[in-house]
Structure formats: C-alpha cells, structure tokens
Image (cartoon, rainbow, N blue to C red; front, side, top):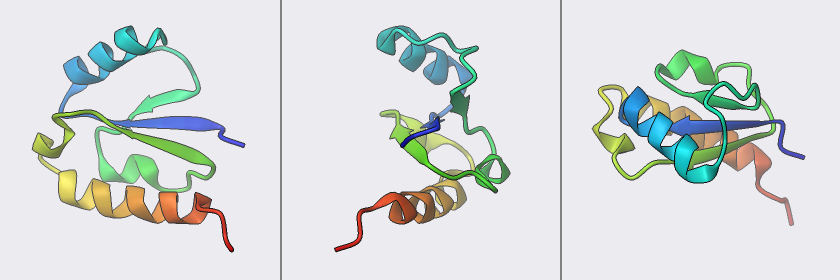
Length: 78
C-alpha cells in the first residue's frame, strides 16, 4: 500500500504544474515535492513520480540514487 507520493521535479513550478495536471492539491499531505535529497530519508511505501524536467534539478543525481533505493524496496520479490 502506498502511503506517500514523492514528486521529483526541477523546481516548485514544475511540481505545481504536475499537481494541477494530476488533479491533486499541492497541499495534499500524501504528496511531497522532493526539493532536497534528505527529504527521502526515513520514507517507506513511497511511489516516486519523475517529472519531465526533474533531471535539471541541481541535486538530481543524489536524489535519483535514493529514490531508486526506495523503489527497489517496493518491488515485488519473486
């Protein structure tokens, strides 16, 4: 079960655009803009969304590394 949606976006404007397009309020407590890599620490059961321009974020490499670890934890084990 997903408890949180972590949105990787270049900046807050792209995050807000994603929220509008998804019909989700940017103030929704189940959605978080990952503006820094440390916002991923301690999260579990997270669905990671990557916006089209998120790779232009200044800390994209570190954020992606940690996001992939979270995604691997969620992957079904066979």
